[in-house]
Length: 309
Image 1 (cartoon, rainbow, N blue to C red):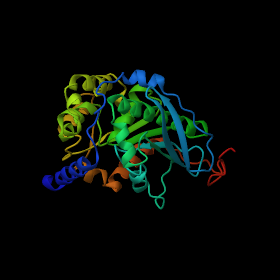
Image 2: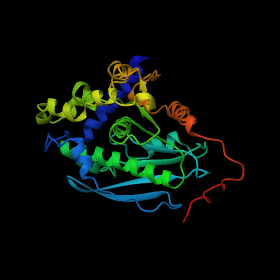
Image 3: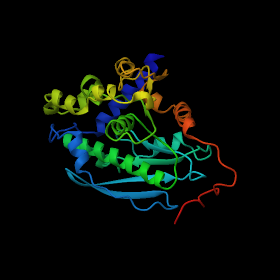
Image 4: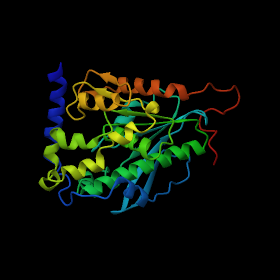
């Protein structure tokens, strides 16, 4: 069935190529992620019973708009699960809503963050205008995931799991390497070397010619294999797809194996794997389980009554 799953990856690549211009067409170099992270300034509004929030972040490329949503759990002491979508996923919470269906309760406070430029297909193009735009987008996403996690912990969440699909999984790994404040990380269809996806898969065709000529520079900014091997990988629980043409299974499984990290494997491609919502949900429930503690009778009000005004 390899051909079946990979045909969806090829079709998706063809369709995206019809609407997306070349990446980094107006600039193929960027400051480091460390520099971008140091420049990001964002402040979250107070947590209320509202679900959707908008934020303006200050970055090296100027102010950018982003947002997030929160689905509060039944008890304040449930863990926080913060999810990040894939590249060019419009609307940004599409996979979040399908993995975490409301009729199937999850024992956690759920949050989904939106990367900058992901309001529409037109604005997504701005995120790949230059390599620095893309790196700023990643930096804001890391900071936003961290801030939302912190906000939920401040309001009583006990423990946290950061996760995401494709680009979102890479962002979760960046948080692990740059912040490391979550208890567990579950990158879905992602690995610690995003440069391999850009430079050594069919995604390379999306890079502008000047960006392809800067392959070494792009690798220096997006290859985090060494940093990952030097990190505490016991908190990382990845999931990959065997027939994935975007996040090549053999390459990324080897990246994890080099650090002794076992991988949960789907017999799918990138697109069909990302659409296997039940399997993704089950993997996240398994990762979440050690963080969920039994309720103490009478210690917590049900619903959202625990939320302090």
